Image 1 (cartoon, rainbow, N blue to C red):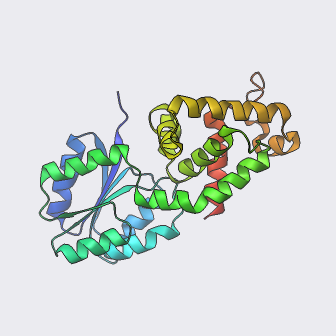
Image 2 (image 1 turned 90 degrees about the vertical axis):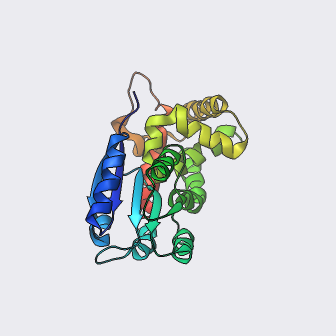
Image 3 (image 1 turned 120 degrees about the horizontal axis):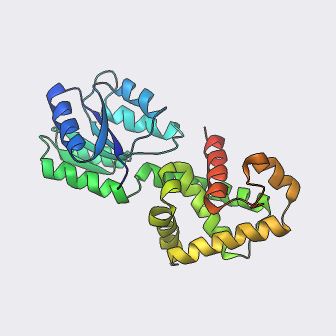
Length: 247
């Protein structure tokens, strides 16, 4: 059974907000709501959401201001953002230019909202993709600092996985179904090949790598019976360090 996803509905119109929240809850989401942009940003900074329905008309800060503020938040998970507005194509185009993933016209058709929510299930947000692009060089540097040989395929796969997970932590719990396929798509590889190459890179590093560096970074977090981290343990630690470096 798939885990329940988290959504946020931000709209200053109470009826629109309640209608959208009820529809999403009926279709597998746990939903938070707000009527103001400032309250939305405060919640995004401390809670994780998979999907954000963002009206451009909000109290305190409008939807445009929210979109402009998001890059400054180094979030462990950037939600897939669908903007809603009744004010025309020009404003929808501006919202998309600021990083929204989709823009829908109000009043929202239920089928359109649910279709967007389904796309969010399998798609990375544009804010997450932008964060990945900005962090790739630093991810490669951190993987190299572990002592992973750059000649191994797993070096690039591991760096990519670290960058991806630094912007979308849900990938860590869905490595087989989401993380490895996304890394594979970037390198024209297979998900199984990615998983195997990352494991080989980790095993090689813990056999021949810089043990002082490894002990300092991983400390007592590694099962002494195994002697080395699993793929996801290694990716998780590096991803968390990478994200914090951009806070």
